[in-house]
Amino acid sequence: MSDSLTREEVLHVARLARIKLTEEEIEKYSHQLKTLMDDVDKIKEVKLNSEERVITPTEEVTVCREDVAGEMLDPEEIMINVPNSNGNFVEVPVMIDE
Image (tube, rainbow, N blue to C red; front, side, top):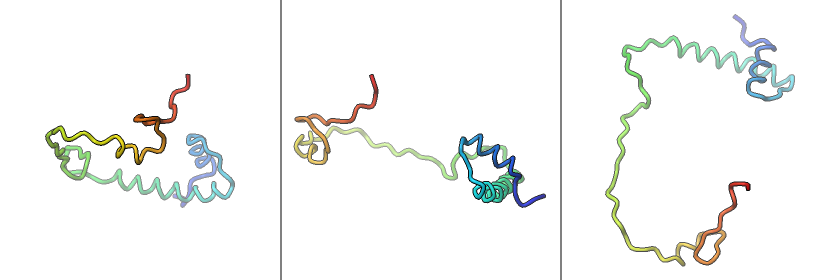
């Protein structure tokens, strides 16, 4: 086995990623991609004792609190940190073209 991918393999990956590579980058990435692929192969070799899939390393527990109504906030205090406003309204940039 070689220590690097061929030039054609690196160019194929670059085409899939839609990036252009310089000659120096092709040489550099040929070694890095080979190392990465070898590491993935090592992970594939791991044999698990259980058929159960693990999504996260810890148990997920969602802590919920009761929704309690509080006092109204003062509009002047809220508007202190707003970069752009018009009266009591917050102005935001248009996100959708017409």
